[in-house]
Structures are given as structure tokens and as C-alpha cells.
Image 1 (cartoon, rainbow, N blue to C red):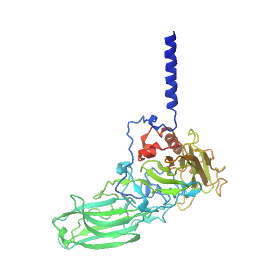
Image 2: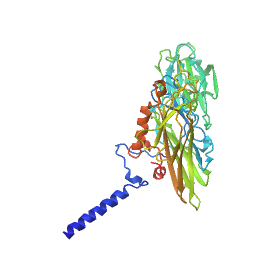
Image 3: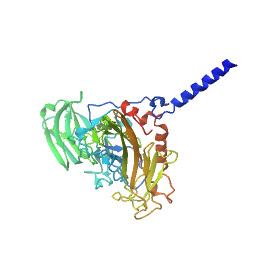
Image 4: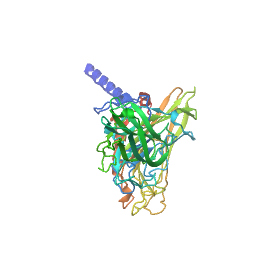
Length: 485
């Protein structure tokens, strides 16, 4: 009996030790993924990227138009790593960071470091499409019609986009005349990206090497252009390529592409795009980096870095902010994140159901305009902030659907009180969720819920440690330092 009692007591003690060790908030090793996918850590890349990204989601409301077909929203990151607008005026600035009341300042493109993974068309990157017009959206003065006829090609604002056609000039005669029309607006984004361009080049069809840079354009402009190509291409096969590297809003339209020889033989197929599609043309499958980190800034005694990451066809963008104490004394301070909503005091705001206060959802309570006006600040799309284990969240929701100024506040602040020991780094992770829905279009009461946004926010909260997608692109050092999930 005494021996049995000994083993029972021993088993109870072991059970208690296992239970206590498994409850540690900082024990990330116990949070193993139940997914069959493998965590993809971010690694420093020698390549670079843009700092404004189009979100590939379905537009399910009528209140605005797309920036590119199938891409109604934008992750337009400002030079202080805040989100500027969202594409449909969801925000007038969100994820503004301050430490002890001191703001994270603006940075330049040269301060940025880009990290893997990279994304291509299978992840929702879109390079080119054929359009009848680019409809008005919140960030341009559209509509912008096709340059000529019913259709033009549209080059999307990505870091390396190419629309090309392979041309066999085996039987061509001199001279070779290349003609095209453009309507373009090239931009470097808020970080002033290095040398954004739209260009026309001739490439080798075998290895893709640039044989000739025909024309390069920066800024904005429009017109029809005619260039005589070198006679050395006669008897060869070449690739005529229209290429873009831009972090702006476009649109960048191409039309009436023609390559003729001395006998007036046309070598470009579907150069006017009047088939209504890209028949005859090839689009590259780019490797786009959508994961970048700031240089460190010294704020309130801490070295602060900010990182942004998004996957083109996901509903969320992620911020990882790190706070490192390089002094010999512990530092206690408050980390504030400020937001200002495009709904301008008419936001219907509520803590996302089921998330234990880890998330806030919002939709625009302004009455629907008829017809919808894309230049208006009303009728913004739904959103959520997923901020994890936070100390305070300050917000005031509108209490009624309102045609005028609501009685809510368009200012939201969530805060963390942290203590960083000497030599320690802490990391705070935040998500912003957007989709193509405007609950305010159909809501009749403020009790309506942005159900799709709620579901996504709840999934992030419940599965941050179980689903690797929410940690992909982070470094192991960042993961090990997380304090709010």
C-alpha cells in the first residue's frame, strides 16, 4: 500500500509540473503547428520590391471600383510604416506607432531591407490585363478610357512586371519600325522607391538578356511613340517587352503596338488588344517581395524596428515591431498604436466576438449613396484590427446610422505597457484585416456585423500559433520575442 501511495503521489507531481510548464506565456516551443505546412522563416534578400501592394480579393460592394481587375484594396504603406488609406478610404492613417509618446519617424527607401518569401501569380500577383477603361477609385481621378478603340492593355504597379511578345524577323526587310501608345503614371510610393519606370526593351528569347533599351519613362505622360530598330535584328527572333517597376496607383495603359518592316509586313499579333484579352502576348511570372523591415530608430531609450508583410490573396497585412534595450537599465514604457478612420465619426465599432478582446471590427455607418460616389469618403469597406493581448483599447462607436456626422470617434488607440530588460528584445505583432465588403450598404441597424471580417479575425486569434501562415516571413528572432499572442 505504501508503494502504491508513493507512485500515485509521484504521478500527480509530474502531471502538475507538465501542466504548469505548458502554460507559460513565453514558451513558444510548446506552440507547435497542427498544420501539415512548414513555417517559412523570412530571410534577407538581395532583391528589392515596391511598398504599395494591391490586395487580390473579390469586390462584393458597389461603393467603389478596382485599382486593377480583381484588386479593389491597397496596402499603401507610408514612410513611417503606417497604413495610409487602404484603397477605399477605410483609413486616414492606421498603425501609427509611438513609444513613450515619441513617434516612429519617416524613413527612406534606402533604409529598407526586403525579406523572403516572394510571391507570384499563384499567390495572387497580377501583372497585366486588358480593360475597356480604368474606373474611378478613391486614389485617382478616373475614369481613364482605353487609349484607342474598345480596349487597352493595363500594366499593374509591381516591382517587375513584363508584357511581351516574341517576334520572328527571319524574313524581315529594312527598316524596322516599332510604334506604341502609352498613358502612364509611375510613382515610387511614400518611401520614394529607387528609379521607378515603365520601359520598352528588346530581349533575347533564349536567356532573357536585354539587347536594347528602346525607351524609358518616369513620372506621368501620354502619347504615341515611333522608333526605328537596329537592322541587326533582321533575320533573328527577338522579344518586344513592355515593363514596369512602380509603387503607385497607375493606371498604365498600352495600345496600338506595331512592328513593321520595309515591306509593311506586321509582326505584332493583337497589338491593339481588340480581342479583349492578351491573345498573342506573354506575361512574366514575377517573384514579388512583400515583406520589408525598417532600419532601427532610437526612441525613448529603445531601438525600434518595424516590419510589414502581406500575401497578395490574403485578407490581412501584418506588422511586427521590435523593441530592444541596449542600455544597462530596465526600461518601462507605453507602446501606442493610433488609427484614424475614413468613416469620419460614423464607424460602427465593436470588439470582435469570440476573441476575448484581442480584436476590434469596424464598418462604415454612413448611409449608402445612390449612385455610389468613388470620390466620397463615405461607404468605406469593412476592416478589423487584431492586436492580441493588449492593455487598453480606446474607441467610441457611432450609435446610429447617420447621413451626416456620426456621434462616434474616428480615432482609435490601442496600447501596451512593456518592460524591456537590458539586452532584451520584445516583439509586438498586429494585423489589419480588409475585404471587399461594405456592410454599411445593406445594414439597417448598428447591430449588424461584418461577419466575414469577424471570422478572419477570430481565425488569427485562435490559430496564430497553430497555423504557420500567420508567422510566415518572420525571423526566428522575432518569433521568439513575441509578447502579445
